[in-house]
Amino acid sequence: MKIRTGIALVAMMAATMTTAFAQGSGADTYKGKCQMCHAADGTASGPAGKSLNVPSFKASKQTEAEMIAETKAGKGKMPAFASKLTDAQIKDVVAYVKTLQK
Ligand code: HEC
Image 1 (cartoon, rainbow, N blue to C red):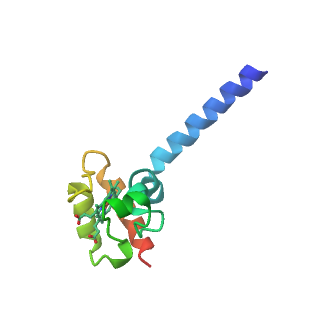
Image 2: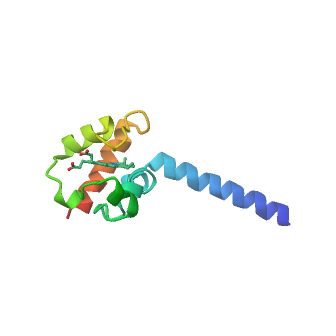
Image 3: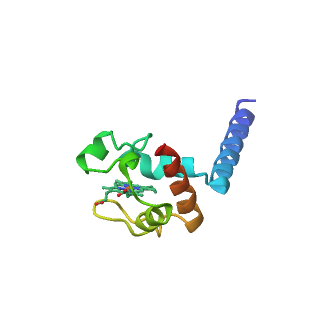
């Protein structure tokens, strides 16, 4: 019985992970790839944000297209994500960043 429960759990976890990847929602990408520097609310208030001088999204004047370009190419201490995320993921995560500015 214990082994079966274990197998069921692993199967469930795998299914959940696959769903998360398939959906690749902007919020999930943000949590995994951006939040450590930009903070959950986009204000860069965490230790990494402060030490790297990350700007707050709330003060950003960039358009969505400019944000997509900078996320792809990187800038200064911000890594480039063109090889780490798909265009669709970058578009989704920037759309999520835009919701943090409000
Ligand atoms: C290692 C820390 C780090 C990570 C991870 C990171 N950033 Fe940044 N980000 C920065 C820094 C530092 C800047 C400021 C760059 C500069 O102007 O020199 C920045 C700037 C930006 C800007 C420009 C804001 C403006 O108005 O100037 C955008 C947009 C942005 N990041 C989006 C993202 C997204 C989306 C992710 C996740 C996919 C991400 N960043 C992950 C550190 C990071």
